[in-house]
Image (cartoon, rainbow, N blue to C red; front, side, top):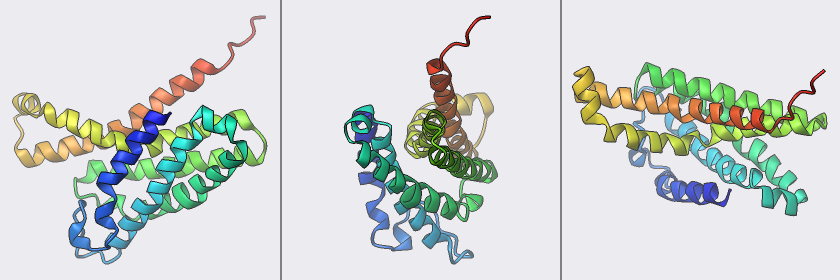
Length: 210
């Protein structure tokens, strides 16, 4: 998992600094003037989400988990209580007013709900010492955490196909931009979840034949 950690660090280096001066004009996301809490919720989500992203990369790294089990537990707490839980709650106040339209808003809101739900399920499984279930739920949670990074990959891929999309659907640039943004939102977490479900099922022992 070092590759995921490197990708996440690079993503954060290019994304987070413009929010550290707390100047709304520097935001990559258009800030709504009719929603006073919008910028504060967005910045809080980004900062807590950064914690979740970095901590999550460490948590799914087998070498780190086996070599430093005590650190794994503490980083896990940071992932949940200093990352996912506050970031997930805050983004529920941001995602419904997505600047890229209703479809993106629905996708991001559902992502936030599932992010919180899978993380809570993973935490409860750990508390009950059901560690196999805990691992499965946290893999799902991390797949959703990584959606922000994969979102940029899908955006670049889909925008590279813009001429093909325009020739097939005959849409203007505004509609194309919103459509690509919406598609990247959904692809960024649905594909991740499908991959993780396949990974979890592949690693489960085959049922015994009678």
